Image (cartoon, rainbow, N blue to C red; front, side, top):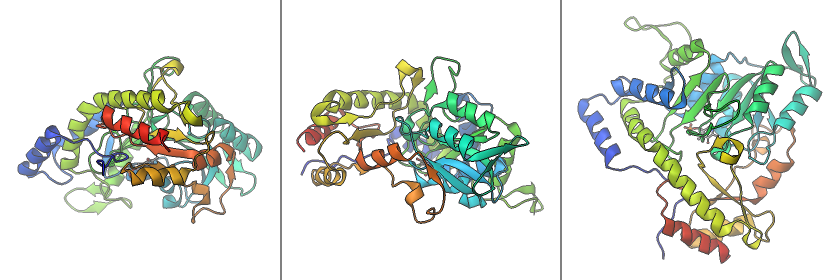
Length: 389
Ligand SMILES: *Cc1c(COP(=O)(O)O)cnc(C)c1O
């Protein structure tokens, strides 16, 4: 049997091992220790923000963002249906709010036409606030996910959020490094254009600390509040006085140490992603009705991180699950895109609009191996296996 080619695994080497060893031997293994602050500042500097707040997961960062934004129980939040569940739960049910689901455009990110249509035709503005005609609820926020490292259509989504008085929260957990290189938003990174943005350092993300996350905000007081909430809301460090309900969401010093080394390697990882992506395009795109879905890229003023690669089967005669099974039999790991969230057990009664493309992509996407250390040879093996299906 040929060697196993995983979908997406961490890329750790001697540098990370050394750093973790130093952290362990220093005794600073928990949530105190200088590396957490250093990693926060390093991420903030990288994405061009004044500060960042580290958390134990991207999900926690999103929960902190929702709390710092002051989204209330009973409010509604517009979110994509084609995404990972952790983009939705923390912004909605964790805080007693409800989602309104919108489908995607061809970048797989939330469809601005769908968001605009919902706001304009299913809602009414009162005193600068948007209300859902059907439920009467205040539509407080818009959650945007930069799916697979693609940049969502930020100029339009920012404009919509502004016109309808929506708080804009960016889930950039998959998109660290994705940024505009030209146009009015040149230099702006995914996660830094809304009211708050979140990153993840989970094991499958482009850089990893094992588990971990980070929140940034264009409101300095939101970042301050998130830090406070993530550290048990201690009002007095010595006396154990807490001034609100906080959480134990802090990153550890060992994780931050790993993150500092990984961040040094991020641009190299992004180059590897680009090389393998282009290899897949050359090998598969246009062959046997197959397509490799494009990223918004340099031609459109964006440098994407190209985190996850999508093989699209909609114009071929291949069946998604049969493809996944046959590749698995050859020790090649692939997966379908997420089951749509408006169809998941907890959300059947929530409104969902503009679903055509999301339903289509759900049915026809297979994600291909994309680890940052995927070799040219292994990528060629995946291409040959797909062509032989
Ligand atoms: C990974 C991910 C998250 C959550 O990050 P964790 O660090 O795993 O909690 C949230 N949203 C999306 C879109 C993700 O891919």
